[in-house]
Image 1 (tube, helix red, strand yellow):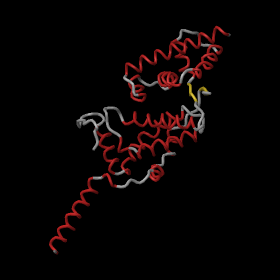
Image 2 (cartoon, one colour):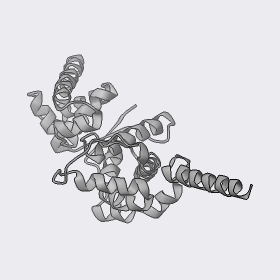
Image 3 (cartoon, chains in turn brown, cyan):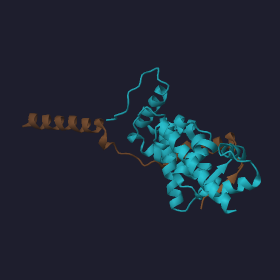
Amino acid sequence: MIKCLIDRVTPSKEAIKNRQNFEAILSKVPKKYSFNSPWFYGAIGISSVLVITILISNL
Amino acid sequence: MSASLQISKDHPLFDEVAQIDRAKRNPAHFAPLYKFYHERIFLYIFKRVEEEEIAYDITSCVFVKALTYLNRYEHRGLPFSSWLYRIAKSELNQSFRDKKAQRTVSIDSMQLGVVMEEFNIDENEHQREILLKVLPLMKDKQLQLIEMRFFEKRSFKEMGEILELTENNAKVKTFRALIKLKELYTKHNHQK
């Protein structure tokens, strides 16, 4: 059942501001892995080319 | 790749979109957006739940969710706040379903007078009581429109942004919600 509250006291701007805690928010965000980043695939690609080049030059 | 709408430097939302792009690359850059929108989102939630502490908890959940899914956010010409309000709406519904929060409508008695004026009814204690009795009988979608327009004094444009409607559609739906409220009021008034 929905409750109607008349002329309810709203917390002050200052009180609301004091409850801000960005660090707590940040700590709750799941860490993301960079598999979807083009940098990840770029680095893998370059190192693969280097390894293949070294292997071929050593043959 | 983001399919966000490209906006020019002189667009009022340019700075905000740039801030969001920075936050997508590094979540620590979300701090200014959090500081800017925290109060607005908290008040939106506070007016819909009974307990203040629960309102703070839900507000935190909204920002955790926003930051978690920020990479999926695409600018479509609407202010960032409309996306945050939509997350808040879904978090609120989840809390009501889980029975963690009691759905509440916070009403300013002055604003109640405005609704009564719309109905052309005399503002007295008896009529007020009937109106307060019939308000919770409305469907949630219609109640939301009355709540936003009359108790939170939002523009139709802002209501449309939050509820994913056009400004005109928000206007029409609010008008229909008012008719429904008046019907309920009249029915209840005759029963007395």
